[in-house]
Length: 145
Image (cartoon, rainbow, N blue to C red; front, side):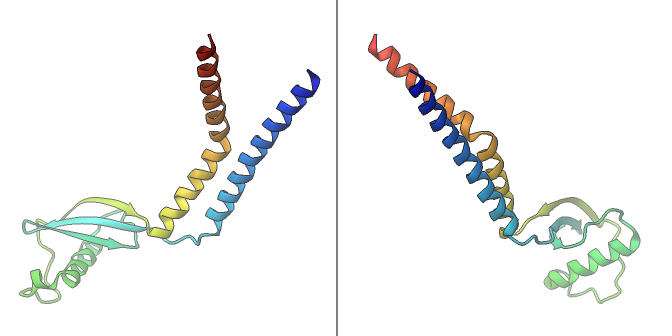
């Protein structure tokens, strides 16, 4: 009987150790991926048209200089829509920045996913294993009777 308890404890200890090693490996893989600066996406609306901009600077306040810089960037990115406008053309009154969001590159997404997987392996893998093992045990027990 004592031998069975030692065997069970050894097996469970090895499973816990395996989960911890897997979590540490995933964590170090995620840390080895170089961090890139996030990009910010803005949706600007003027003249009834919506324009998407992706820039590396986050805009906190919309000063006239920022509005001018955004409008100049739109004119550079969409030259067909602004052919008649020469440089120095004032920002239209209906120019609005409707929404913005943070965009990650492929490397940034891979880094985030591997970091999340390392925490899942550390904290959730063993409880999921125990739950699955319990369900299998319960099904076998009910099938015997």
